[in-house]
Length: 145
Image (tube, rainbow, N blue to C red; front, side, top):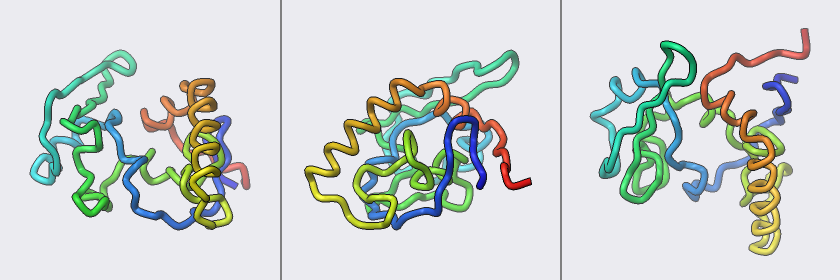
């Protein structure tokens, strides 16, 4: 099974298109530049930061703090070019887990969803560096070989 350091990936479960996971996150500057014409939200600020010497990421801060590429129908305007972290969301147990859908694909009840959200938030705080490494595009490791 493929994994990033510390995060095991499962088969994806069905997205409910709620848009809750599509928030402001760091992206490669070339992704932003190549897709600027596909922005779906008002940009408040562009926040560049250095991830390592000579390497930069860019966060596009929007008026509602959702991803600049999230459409009104909760779809991705750059689905084919979306960042790696977006491709991996919903394929893991832990920080990239969806709180609305269980790993078996069952829609969680509001109570289950709240409990899962709180657990994920706690785990996210504890494992921030793991999520940061995915956002920065560290390579996928295949354990099967």
